[in-house]
Image 1 (tube, rainbow, N blue to C red):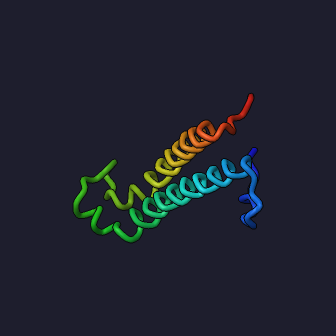
Image 2 (cartoon, rainbow, N blue to C red):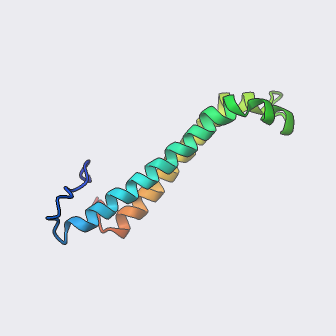
Length: 102
């Protein structure tokens, strides 16, 4: 498991702390991207853009698309975001040599 906090940036960082800082910043970018997508899907598609989605997209299962996104689509999108998070974090760990040995 990786360190939950970035290495101290007091100017005394050694050569081995620099890859951990790069990994920390990379993981923050991944989390920010996943959370942004989650916000757009969960709040945007089901609340903010619901009327637009209902008017411009076909019905799914007899329900308007905005309603469907609020009920089913957000859950499916959340599962896809979990899989995307796993993929991107594993790739980042591999790039920085922090793979699990199991």
